[in-house]
Length: 170
Image (cartoon, rainbow, N blue to C red):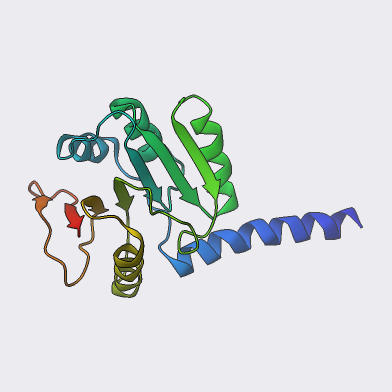
């Protein structure tokens, strides 16, 4: 009986990781040096709302919430990553992590969003969500991959480094 219960729990946890990778993107940690680069190309103000969609271990949302004294909201659906992000957020007064599917989360209060969208399909799905929900002037930062069909207002790509694309939605 205990073996069956343990198997079911492990299967469920593993299934959330697979679902997260399949529905949006696999977890790829953001390098600290890239987080430092990202913070230099935005101007968040105290009280602004910053989302990290598919926040993984929470390092980006926690960093930005502390650096800019903004309201950090991380959304994650993979249980192991959610637990890590939730524990990390306990040490940051303005960071909150939510266990949600990012496509079902209401992000209309965002001033800035950070994403890692690893495919064109996800990029187009996100763009549709952004156009429906975001208020004019909301910034979207895409790590590594561009949003297809939209012109960035800023691109940071030093030689042989991961690109950071910044967009403004109207």
